[in-house]
Amino acid sequence: MTTPPNSGPAESLRVTTGPLPASAKRYAAIRISSGPYSEDIRAPYREISLHPSSGEPPVRVYDTSGPYTDPDTQIDVHAGLAPIRSSWLTARGDTISYEGRAIRPEDNGRAPDKRLVPEFPMRRPPLQGKSGRPVTQLEYARAGIITSEMAYVAARENLGREQRLSEAAERLADGEAFGAAIPEIITPEFVRSEIALGRAIIPANINHPELEPMIIGRNFLVKINANIGNSAVTSSVEEEIEKMVWAIRWGADTVMDLSTGRNIHNIRDWIIRNAPVPIGTVPIYQALEKVGGDPDRLDWEVYRDTLIEQCEQGVDYFTIHAGVRLSYIHLTARRVTGIVSRGGSIMARWMLSKHRESFLYERFDEICDIMRRYDVSFSLGDGL
Image (cartoon, rainbow, N blue to C red; front, side, top):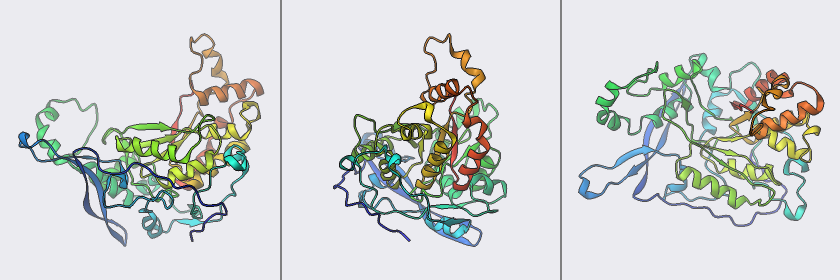
């Protein structure tokens, strides 16, 4: 059941919509099946019209813009995007809803009431995996199960592929494969196999049903990430959603929310509910805000609470600097720029102050257990 929170109505928010120049939003109809469940869905693509003098047909390209470039879709950021994955998750029956943690003042940087961004108008109870049941795309793949997400990304990877292959046959024949084995047509089984082998991931938190699934891997199309985020200087829902919309209009496959100021929780909720692409974060940033910006006050309990908070919201992947260890810090002493990773420098400061090993390293197994329950993917930060 979806229930509205207690906070008052948000101001009217508008974002950029409409087709891109010389382009039209198109959909390929496909049928996905997983066990007894089947459903007809539409995989999006962008059709670019060429000048009549070229004598060439329109070009199909991969599209990341979601419904924001579809003139037939009415966008209402207060309602969020349609939860296209909800029926898939329900059909699998491997998740369970629960009450979830309460939103606390520190989640939003203790922003005063007059500066507190309103909560997203609708809140779903969070989902987590049932005990003893598979919930991650990796577990399904290794069990030989092709999920709806796998079928969806296979369809997206294939759009326009036949046209490009026929044009590039000679270049492909002369190219160096470097050990890759990419089939001419991407099948759901190939997607499953690549995930099972650990060569690809589908970042898809079970609490992000608005997501249009995509895949990252060596044998798939190149993907692009874009970074956005509010700061202590500015903190606006409209600005952050607009940043996300412009990022995906111009081809960002994933978006990282690197917010560091107040209202982090509420603004992230607005972003995720309106995001058709995977959203990533660096949880240590928000954990640091919760302790007033003082790395010495960080601990595992604060970090763990932040992980669960963001998992329940629907964050699809975390950057975690678990590889920065106490014994490595002295190696950076003679570097001209020192430690250039913000997350790594936060943990280095904590380790030097406490003279202890990183809790991200020591608690890595627990971090894995938390992320597994929600199917959140790792982006392991180098931290240096």
